[in-house]
Length: 279
Figure 1 (cartoon, rainbow, N blue to C red):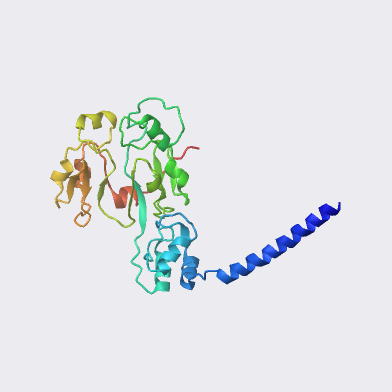
Figure 2: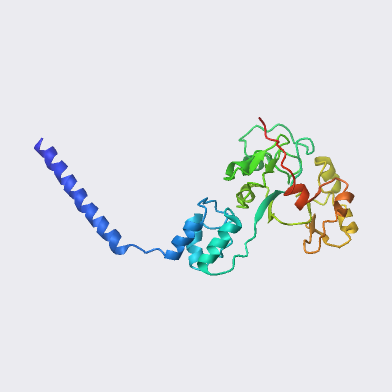
């Protein structure tokens, strides 16, 4: 019994001494955080989404205070946060409000599937194990990896097998674009005007595109030829619009034989949200 008491007393005394020592060294060698970094951190929304490219809000705040990052990189906070951070560091905000656009129209009834997939129900697993579940190697796999990582309730899987963006909630954090193994999400300014091809199939074989997806870009270049502003060019098998020239005339949309063109401001970002979520 005596040995137990002695051991217990020694343990308590040792813990007390170590506690005092740790407190002393912590105070003696602590690193004072930049007050500006603290102020910037307080101005951030605290989402820790990583959309800024830094490890959380603390990492971004430290980078801003050290002048290694601009004030407009917090996509989750938007223009209001950019203005607040810019005021703290004394620079202009010039914030760009981004949103996410899915460049795939391969819904269940439009895109041909290889067969029944039996495996881990994620887009990444389907791509790694079976090369994807669709005959179109570029198409959305439809398992909702993007939905799982969205922290702002801006993405939901529709009955058509594609993720749908709620632009009232989208903050442009870019997590969906980062997570998508097919790289189908494009981050664009919310106020963008002009046409965009909702297809990422870059194969130049027209017959295979038609066979695999009814709404795929067949590389006919009808859009390139009809554009009155000559602002569309084929780049790596996909028509790309020069938005500095595009007037949203809609000629490309009317001419496209597979109807894979849309206007960003009316058909995508400005379109009324359709409720396609499974009950």
